[in-house]
Image 1 (cartoon, rainbow, N blue to C red):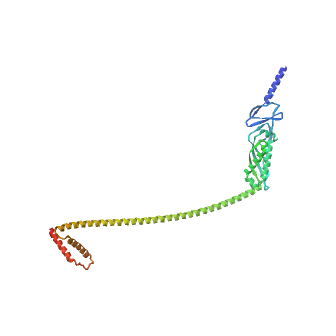
Image 2: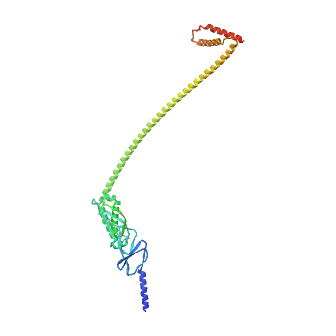
Length: 351
């Protein structure tokens, strides 16, 4: 009987140990284990064995957003205690809050924060409600940052605001084992009257820019037209200059060619006359030589013959003109007649 009781106790212990002694930790999660109320260890990913009753997981408050929508159009947010700590990057979207800018303009802003737990022990023991602490710190820091900026700076300096929020939250979160990666501002909604005034201002600015752009366009158009006209005149003058230069070059080349032609013509004419004279002289020389040979055969003086021939030629030229009225006879006319007589004797001797 006692043996059965012992076996029953052992079976109960095994069941309890199997139910509470095995802890399965998923990837990117961890569990903080306390032994008798004191921190013992942090469980890694996979199957872990703890001692039931002696070892217990430490709970942490976590923020959950329900999918159902309330009447005001916002998702409902709840906080629950969990034993498994998520080590992945977590996104918290905070509800809209009213902040006041430096120029006393109330503005509605909501922000999104991306953070990640890097030290689970600090996240459990250094802060009681980590999500609520991050939310409150974000809201107060956002109020401080927006309070240092005007409305125009708030609307145009999202990157600056995001950077300041991330630095402040990251410094505070380091004590809590949290790393703040990014902070983004979703909406910045000024009051309706401010938005109406800003729209009028933006419309006036757009009209102003449109007029400025139109004036700049007219100015550029006139400048381009004047530049085009100036360039056209320059091109026309350059073309006229080139035309005159080419025309003068052509005229100069034509004169050079004409002069070269006249020169070559005169040279060729002179050479022709020289050749003609040479040929005439050679013919006369040959004729004189033959006459001299013929006259020498008759034992007469060939000089008289030649002189008589020249006188006769000249005399013919003198009397050939139709306007000649007076015939001049040189005093050596008797010599010419004697030469003619000599020619007669020569011809008689040849016969």
